[in-house]
Length: 362
Image 1 (tube, one colour):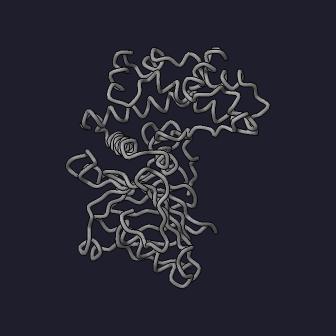
Image 2 (cartoon, helix red, strand yellow):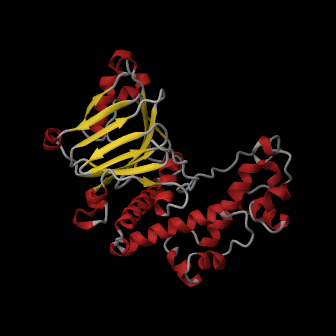
Image 3 (tube, one colour):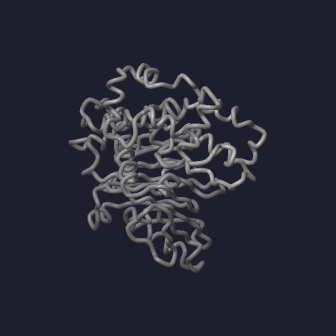
C-alpha cells in the first residue's frame, strides 16, 4: 500500500520492504472504525461504510506492492460499503480490482451485475462506476484478497473488462487460469517475503498475465491478448503442473511438453528468458521439498531414501549428490538434531500454486 497510518503499519520481508501490514490493534479503540474507513478510502477508493460492529471494529491488511499492481489480503469485521457517483467525480483512479473471497459470503453489485460470492469465488469491480458491496455477517470476520489492476496495464482494450463487472468467477480446481490466479493471490504475501526486486517484478507480471487470461477466457477473447501475456499465463500453468507432479520420476521435459500439446523445443523456448530452465526448476523444487521434509520433526520416521523417492528422485545416491552439491552438506544434517542443526531452505521463492479454496454457496 502506498500510504498507511504509520502508527498501525510495519514493513516485513522483501529486499525493499515490499510486504506491508497494518492493523486496527495499533489504533485507540474509539478511533478504529474511522481509521479503517480512511485507510480504505486512501488505499483502495473512497466509499461510504456502515457497520453494526463500528464500536468494536477490528481489521487488518497485508499488502504486497508490485511494479504495476498490488495484492492485499484483508480481514475485517462485517460491514457494507457504497461508492456513489459523487465520490467517483471527486476522485477516480481508473482501476479495476479482482476480489477473491476466503470466508463469509459477499454480495457485490455494480452496473448490471449482481454477484453472490462464496469462498473460492472471484469477481471484478471498477473504481469508475457506482458500487454496492455487503460483507455478510456470519458471526466472524470477513476475509478476502484484492488484486489491483490499473486500466492501463490490463491488456483488454475498448473497455471489454467492463462486461464482467460483478460477475462471479470461480477459482476452484478445474477453472483454468482463474484457479491458478486464486492460488497465486492466496500465497503471494508469503512468497514475496523471500523475493528481491527482480523476482518480485516477475511475480507481479505473472499476476497480471493470469488475471488478463482469466478475464479474456470469460469473454472469449484469448486470441486478442498480447503474445507475451499468453506466454506468461502458459508458463504459470506449466509451473503449476510441475509442482503438482514433483513426485513422479517420469516428470521430464518430454512429458511436460506432451501434456501441454507442444514440442520440447517449444517448451524450452518458452522458458528461454526465465532465470532457470525447466529441468533446473524441477530439480530445485524437488530439493526444496526434500529439505523441508527432512527438517520436519513430524516426518522423522521417514528415511532419507523414502523422502527422496517421495519427491521423484530415482536413486538415493543421486539425491544425496544433488543435495550436497546444492546446499554444501549431506541430507542427514538437515534432520532435527543433525550435527550442524541446519535450517530448511525457503521453499516459497516463486509464485505459489496451492489448492484453490473450496467453493461455498451464499
